[in-house]
Image 1 (cartoon, each protein chain N blue to C red):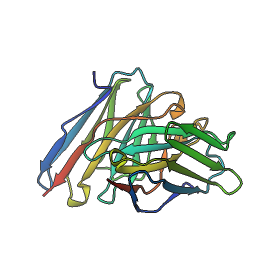
Image 2: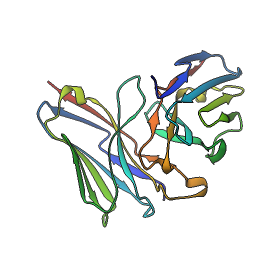
Image 3: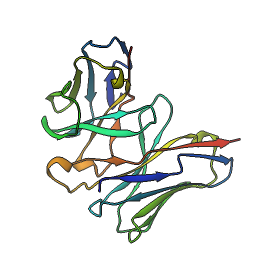
Image 4: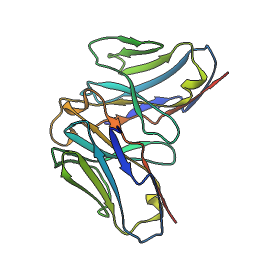
Length: 117
Length: 113
């Protein structure tokens, strides 16, 4: 019930194209869905996050789409650039959970994005 | 000013040795974590501390022992290192149950030979 499934494992996109990464979750108690971006040799960094009371959130070229009934959410990167080449992780948590779930973030398996110039 | 700093960045050691990784955060966060990233880049939580109290202790061998001397520090000690312990270990911190996101350190690449 704690799993977050992410696809695809890897993605190659041409510069200017749209990158789409999908995630699905099982635990209906999850209430917070962030995306993290990781460059080689660095730690993951928060990119954008959404809560299930909205179906979409946009920040610059990055958009999260959220489908609560399907328990799915996705990241869209518009006008993809070579500098966007990185590993992307979706994640989920219940920030209101207590006990041993407090603050616990469950990650998807990651997607390696390569944007060709 | 580094928000979450880990030392060392690289650690190469022989099987059977004991080693420690240190982590410090200057963000005033109340919760700190250790995550392990394996060779397939999968991130899995190991431990978390909230205000120096152990909260999350996932299925991790007893050879791994976290210690939080204060709210800003979380160290990881590993006894009797094994080949399978080779991975990148990330420290992270958050506030308010992680609602505003985690801040990760840059990781410690542990290689056991």
